Amino acid sequence: MEPKIVEKDQIILVGFSFYGDPFAESDGWTEENEIGRLWRRFLAYWAENADRVKHLRGGDLSYEVHIGGYEETDSMGHYEVFVGMEVAELEDVPVQLLVKVLPPTRYAVFTLRGEQITSDWPRTIYDEWLPGSGYESAHDYLIELYDQRFKGLENLAESELDICVPVR
Amino acid sequence: MSQIVSICRAIDFVEDNLREEIAVADMADAAGYSLYHFCRTFNSLVHHTPYDYLMRRRLSESARELVETDKRIVDIAFDYRFNSPETYSRAFKRMFGVQPSQWKERERLDRRFLMPRLTREHLAHVNAGDYLRPVLEERDVFQVAGLMTLVADDGETVSRLWEVLARELAGVEDADYYGITWYPAGWEESGVFYMAGIEVEVVDSANPGLVVKAIPPLTYARFIHRGARGDLPLTLDYVYQTWLPKSGERLVYPLEIVCYGRELDATQPDAEWEVFIPIRRT
Image (cartoon, rainbow over all chains, first blue to last red):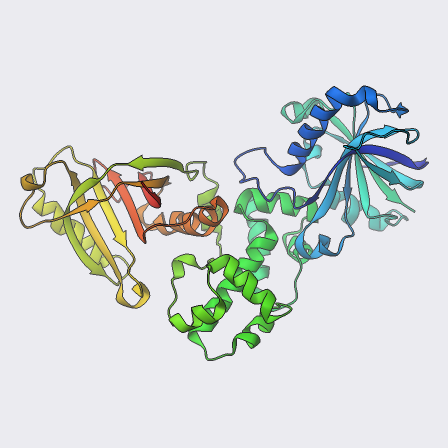
């Protein structure tokens, strides 16, 4: 897996958030977990209210951001998952939406295909690629970028997903 | 299967470090996974979060020490890496429903409620299918005729009881076989009451050498045990240690009922037995 290195300006997102161990309630026999629930909650809201959000950009691109670096991230496996859409600026944001501002940074962008999407790619990226890359992790988050190339978990073989890892 | 092997490495790591300051990230390292992938895989195979499993193992070992040693509660709390006796008491009460001091006074252990060290066999058993997902079932009163005794060994008494019962019941057909266990207080020392029997409609049709027991109307969580008789403890560990705390239900009687169906053949490797755990009085 070789990444593209790209510079990105600050990214402003509006969306919904979960904090904790997102798999705590799933009993292993269902796909049900907090990330899936978060997406359903967000998409249901978005279907009704997208036109209330001004300065949308990014078209059909949607963001899933995993944010660690909390005191409990390492000790308990708790982290934040934020899902949302990009806006160019903030104006009259509906109160239901949270705002997340990602700093301007350089990203290593990996394209995952098919089975790679459900593999342990964070390990491949952080433990195998990063140490020999000449880069280091710049921030405690990463972005999963979903667009029309992602056809759903049931069509994994035809799907692609971009992972953006902040580096310096 | 290789996932189970990796998760077992994390479980072994927990066992080696129960009294050390370890984090879920260290468990992930032991498994060779990223934290994200580890949490996801661990939950899906073990049905506990890694942190929940770690805490339950620590609390279970501490509970054993409370009863089996003369150590002070505060020392045990710090030994198992709780920040204060208060944090320890709260966590202890959440898992066992009583304070550590109350548990110590009992001077007994009910190992059904201790989280065992999970093994590869546990994980393989739990992940062999979704038959361990229970169904809630209301049952009216029913009667079982058979033989009952106090069992304090590892199964020899139970096997003998079934042999004797088979002779007593020679000629009986079309009846469901039941194994009923009652855990009296202090059963770890005294043993459990075990009844081997068949369901009967009419009491006076039963052999007068048999005892008859009426099981009151109850709502049960009914699980399917699939596997050999010897694997039944794996199913029961799952029921008491994983399903029960997650479900928010509680046992209304220390009673465990296994229905073997019409044919009792404990040597079949793919037997399917029903396990009933009473969770509500009706």
